[in-house]
Image (tube, rainbow over all chains, first blue to last red; front, side, top):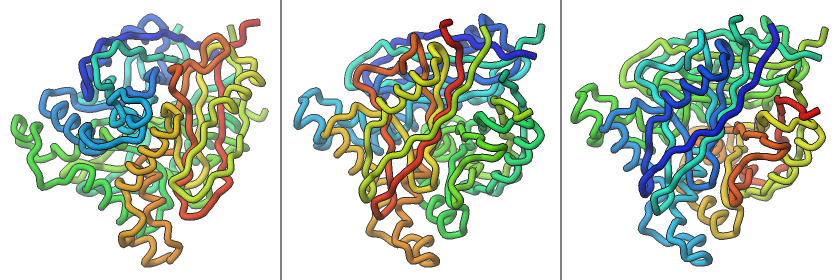
Length: 144
Length: 144
Length: 144
């Protein structure tokens, strides 16, 4: 069976970082449009102050992860980036680099094959609200 | 030469987190079955309290990495997740989210092209032993 | 339209870790050679003391990220790896495992589709200068 590809970008609006939202159902709609039933989806956050990962998307984990992210690179301390650029988001750059911009997820039987309590989240680390773009590339086979 | 795809899941049994095991030879067997000689393998940990990365798999690095993971999100402190769910694994969720569930590795000449002392490890972060599933998707070309 | 694949490795020389360099333009040249206009690029650092991520590549962020990496796993403390191997790079292994060896980036209109101020960096974490190899796999379609 020959392989197909489908590319699409999705957009989300996020508050001052670290802020995050669940994009699992948006990705599921992209998979539907692609008609791919077996394969993989890669998602990449555009911009150097955003990241992607998976969590159990419930308020407690969201709060815990925000706290841990702010401990990796605290907003209040000195950053060399700010000394030169004075935009106050030195911590945002470091946080995003440590978490990473890309993720790959499996598609099986036309659905994302993740855990029941495992959602894909888009994270804004910037020091102001941002509309963020995620580029999605799906590669796989179609049932018929 | 046209591209092929091969999908398979593998399972590993891990102890209370952070615990990890080397899945490189299992992946190598999946590559054999796929007959793909040139391309890429993506591996994704199913579930929000597991992760994947590469290390030199020797007891010292394993111990050092476990310690570092427990410093990222220590088991003993308060987590908002636990305040609501009382399952004692708030740290597990944060640790797994920071490490990330997915990885991509190159296939060259029918083998994983990684360093000699670079093995793929599956990590369980949960606060009890778990059987964990890793979804593998291989895309590439076959020699003949 | 049928899918194509193109594989190539690139090499970079880096100083004592954490040291990093911008490999975006090298990747762009690989994309040109592949003739792929729409798809994805995966890049993987060979070796267990290197990693890949994206940053705004300017001296301030580079300095800030190096500092944060050295806080994740400080060079000066005891590591079990060193107790056995005496090669002084216990911190390098932990740092690289936490950042991760692989990344995926989208290709759109024949170019990497990343942010204007988002560059792909190769990081050496080892305790001496290293020539590092990155394996690149491009999968996608060609315009004509």
